[in-house]
Length: 331
Image (tube, rainbow, N blue to C red; front, top):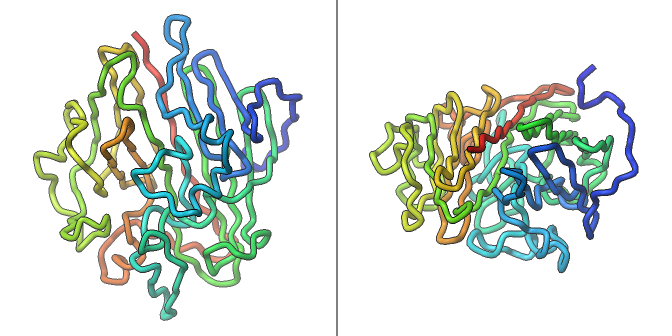
């Protein structure tokens, strides 16, 4: 049996926050998430030398004042104050141009936000808690329970957030519950704070290509090409807070490293092999995003042009699964 489908005891929680947020914790991690709004991360802290440090933006104060889903559905722009520190994108990641694509001879039109369909269809909806323990939380969602969901195939998804020792992991399972084939993809959209203990991060990103984006609309114009120098983070280098970046990278192999070296904290990020793509987003804000995903931006339309972009095809009752891990190193 898949471990996410196994039963586990439910504890009487003592680490809940207002607005239904739940805290899971280990000796090294504290993670707050909200099942009512997509099981998003609302805050995450790392313990170093007996003190707790935020490594993702703390969105709990905003969540205490307003519904996360309401704020995001109301048209939050990408540079608005964050309503969540991380969210997962499924049954596709990032954008679909004009919300329109063709699949197996059928034209599909989704509702658009910010000019395009964006960030999947399930991320801001309430999820059902399956199991909850001190160090883990498992939730599920069925699209048939949400008639307004912006996706024409019935799907089921499960997510498990888990903290054990120095590792935070998040596992996604997406299942096609329809009677016909379905295009699919998913990914994570974690933000990270720009400074820890006053230190800015060095990044190491093991990717070797980038999708061209001549219109600067985060939608690829063609197949991925070799990295230009300004986007080459294969060797550790500072992420310049004045360098605006929003790009989709290809060829993820190995660990991404976010190293606040002078701050004494390093994160080592790995994802399952199916996540061959990475989005790097560096806005004029006190945070940035490093997003491991299974498909490129606008993958379904790229694939219809014969460009490999990571689109999966799930038959009836078929599933795809991946795990994201963040391991902390302190010094």
